Length: 242
Image (tube, rainbow, N blue to C red; front, side, top):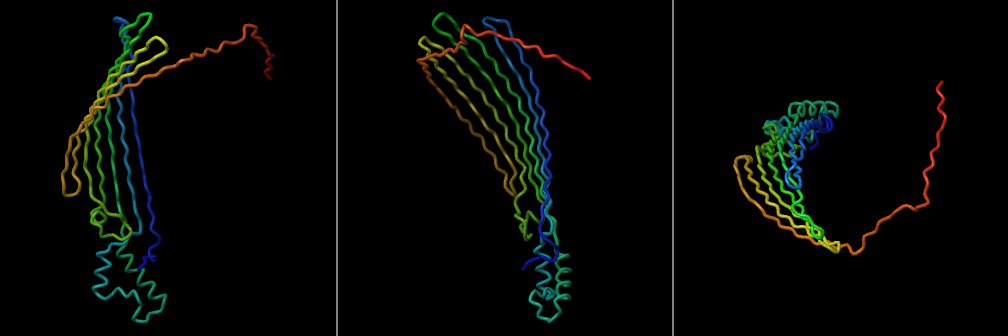
């Protein structure tokens, strides 16, 4: 069967996004000097989707069971009359699917860096930082579409979920003689998430530690200088205003 009498299926999607970001940057004159930075961010995204000219399967099944739904025109009606009757039936069963989703994220991060040690041979710089983020997500469909009893729709469960993330990291940059650089870093991430998915409530917590070490050697250092016989020539053009 095709529900062509009520028109083609169509979808209109509306998406709105909003994002706020702000931060502070400073310097503390202690030791070799400490640079610091603190940032905060709030992000929100909302999606509304309207799916037109879908068909409610329960209503169609009721028409079939009652004998009113004569898809093969066994009564011998004219095409015009039969088409009008089917248009009326599909009009009764027409359904507009509604879907909405909302995502919200709040995040704050801080970082501190400084020169730890320096002499004629070795330079050591370090940075430490932390990030904290909370994410909330909801997804809802109209009850009929969510049940899967709508032709032309995808169905699906309603979702109410949240996730908290904590991250911390540290990094050392060591410059050695011979143009050798050593970089070491360590990062820790922890996720704590939970959510109501359909009839089930699920939750979980996991973390990860990621170390890193890298060595770079640049045997050649090239410096480009302009020729000593370059001269700067200044040209002044007249300006006419009319």
